[in-house]
Length: 323
Image (cartoon, rainbow, N blue to C red; front, side):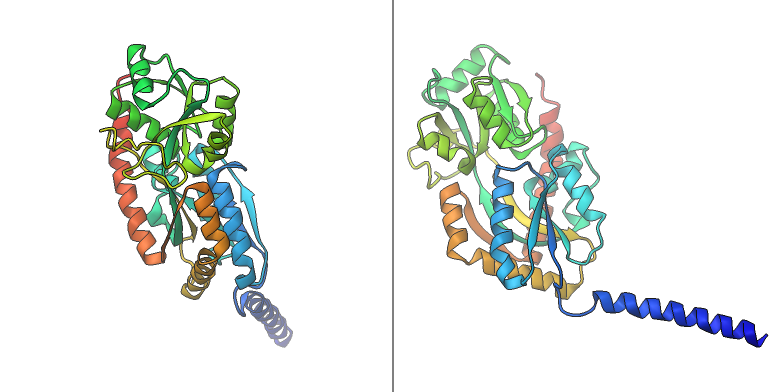
């Protein structure tokens, strides 16, 4: 009997030792190792640029590497699903693009803003409609007239079925009473390359994603899909000016799996705020036509929930539009 008790005591000591060993490996100040930032889009697009710049700018404050990993597909649902299954310890976070408020209504994943811990928002980006510089359409009215004359004859590429730029193309169809043929790509870099190659007629993308090719004379911007003009397209009218009041911006922020400890959330929010306040970030926003806007965790959560309600109402209507 004594030997049995000794065996039990020894086993208990091993279990306790393991338990304390596990606790000590996760205790101490956060972070103590590399962070992984999951990007829901392919390399080269707006989401990828924002994620990589913010990762780089936050590293000095965090004191550890922040490594970006791209997981594109299904309007971000693949990346969002991956992140929510990680432990809520702050070491795996995600880029919270506008699509995180859209994927549930699209039927890609049962995930919404309420299912994650949002850390902060850092920017918004208006959409722009672009065509090749040698196209016959000199302005938005020319494009609308051509699309109305022959429904579904014009081919428009987008950054993926269900993406924010696809959503804006559907909005254009609704508000301008026209129909086009949609061709999805894995990100705006692919859709813009297709346009430059002459494979499609037009693209709606982020203002900053197209600006280099517009400035180089390869593409022509027909309209900014927003209430006010873009600082990088000062001569390009807005859809609102042209009496077509539509356009929904993309936005960028960061999120973590639900259940993030409050001190870790505060630490990450503070690091991203410091990155947001740098001259490098302001410069990127100016160059890419983004609006630098910071929302803390609480305000971002409210904003994203409202966006989820909006998309939940609008997406089913747009997807069932008569073609």
